[in-house]
Length: 534
Image (cartoon, rainbow, N blue to C red; front, side):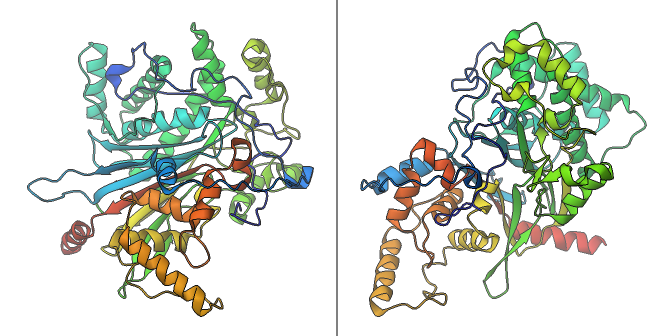
């Protein structure tokens, strides 16, 4: 866990301080844009293997100590707010005749980088040809390539998986006859969520092949949501693997496909439709539901399971899929083959391909990997692949009126905040109750002077209360700046936000947070209607 103080080692990959993968890009917003020749600005097209994707060294391996004195310079409040709010995004579901007919009122999201460039990604979209809303967070490792790709592709694959065969036939007929295609998703994107147009043709072709195969499964009934989510995850991961093996005529497409496949990313996606919530998770990001109790207090209900060495069932699953002779090597030092911390992820083909296939692909295109020694090496104790899967674990929950919000976040948040604290902070911010509640010393010995200071801080908070209109921003502010009493310390927050690029990763991971506010009134009406039918 990476805390503000007393930090422990929390890297995804053991070994030296280099990142062990690459970096990348993705698909355009709608089918009609896939032929665009434009590329969005940013680092997606210019990154080279090994550049700007350094992981911090393990303390156990290096034992370094930094004796430099902390800087006396302190960020001003406007500077802090500018940093925290740069990537914030809010969406409110439109009302009709003054009423909101969706179980989702809206959502807030935000990101704060630790790696340079940031390796986390986020996605959100409303389903237009079916029902519901899709929201996801993606935690890339060894570069942003895979996270970028799945953040732009996975929701399309899920939407296709949820569509009835009749709608898929209509889409295919329109594409085949070069007629306009109605979009299947309405994206909710921050301007900084860039898109790489050059890969659009390849990604569209793969998606079209997928829906053609869905059409050909004529005897199969429409999948339930859980099965659709699993199929979408697995199919996209399969396409990522296949695209890296095929030589395209465009050198950039070859390079990008290999970068995506060699890097990796976890994924946590929620599909909300009426009172039905399905969370598909592969890796160690997390989904937590905020539940308000009758007395107004808050409880946290986790809707996902982490796939890492801290989950005994996941360790057993991984070991059971390989011969007994590999029992001691499949999971070593709490990592897959001693290297990879998440036990489920997209990409990471070095843990999925046979050694023969790795040599065939990598050695046939050495020019794509120039300057990166890792990609010319192979994992030790690699005998019976695949060792890694992208198949998600899907959790279903029927919403109740007391379920007020859903938090999706990468492990950068959960490493430094307990789920109960997260729910408490979000719940109080949404209901505007925290100013009125009494100050608790939480078991600490507090002097009269200290209590006076706490009261003054509360008074200051009341005068500038709720400067964060975005709940995700508010949560990140608390994650980095709260003291033991739950109050924001300006000096602590300033230090955490002004760490040099090379040192920030030592103290925390990238942070990506999505807070979905639920429509309790409508959910209650749904439940009453469903109960009356039953």
